[in-house]
Amino acid sequence: MVKSKGWEWEKVKGESEKMWKEPAEETYYLVQRWEKQEKKELLDIGCGLGRNTIFFAKQGFNVHTFDISEDAVKRTKEFAKEENVTIDIKQADMLNIPYGANTMDCVYSRNVISHTDTEGVKKIISEIYRVLKNEGECYLTLGSKDTWGYKQKSWPKVDDNTKIRQDEGPEYGVPHFYADYELIIDLFKDFKIIDIKHIQDFYKVNDKISTSYHYHILVKK
Ligand SMILES: C[S@@+](CC[C@H](N)C(=O)[O-])C[C@H]1O[C@@H](n2cnc3c(N)ncnc32)[C@H](O)[C@@H]1O
Image: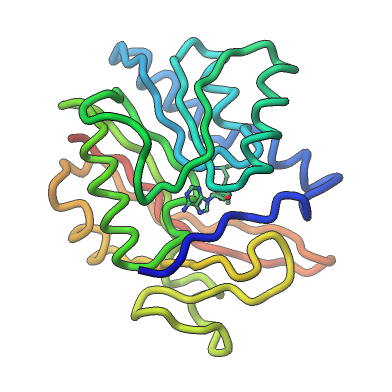
């Protein structure tokens, strides 16, 4: 299995840092959905700067989170203090989720579990299954094979689905796993699939429009 490597969050400053403090849009929907189902214990895998972790905590969930990056953990702790919310936070690797079996009502993870190879993704999905209670739900995203990164010939290939990112920035040297629909169906065969979306995002980098595709996946144990 490829070695895990966290983001270099010290490279994320200014306008970009502001963006990473705003909750992702699906979190608003998930709060409604999971409140209605009376879910309480929520695990956010890979908190980054804490935007989703803090949002879920503010809505009344008991939020547990971790990240492999020491800087991410430190900055999320500071953010929680500023916002006056209590969260359970650790530094850990998602390949071994630091929680017991059947402890979580819901698991959320945005743009994190792709940061390993095929063997790693399989291990993480089995870890998510282990920590979820029966009827527990998981919402996560996976990078898509339609994204430009998968087509980079100069990025070292780890396996048929995985490349190591080479452009300068916080993700330099971080493994990226890319999925397609068939692979997702196979990866989540132990779960009940509720919804799969393939979403294209547009953003500006140095005045140039760039685009990326991700799968958004909602499953139930
Ligand atoms: C794209 S950021 C997303 C952060 C956050 N989920 C969000 O939406 O703002 C990816 C995060 O995954 C973390 N990460 C990468 N590999 C990891 C691993 N093996 N275990 C835990 N966290 C990891 C990175 O350090 C980084 O904070």
